Length: 119
Image (tube, rainbow, N blue to C red; front, side, top):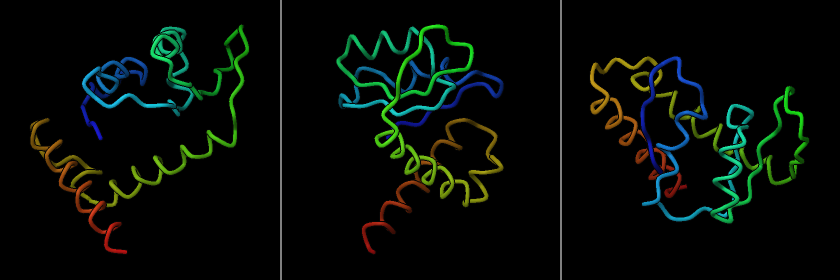
């Protein structure tokens, strides 16, 4: 898992490059919401032979389909974020520095992972 912080009012697709660095294992599918619907992202993933499942924005002129069965798996990611936000310190961001905040996000993620392994 990779975590990073962008400025508060930054659009989703501007943080895409931070998350999809080349030093991570190559994914087979990119499941993303409409905030990531950009031609640049689709082209980059196509060059890397990664299947993109991104619903279209309403303003898109060229229609692109989505496999809704595969896209439903994105719900797992959304539930993970919901569980992370149950940690009050993550949801409200009490930490003043980005390094401290990301450290606590990592600690909370590890706690969730260990809890998942023990069940």
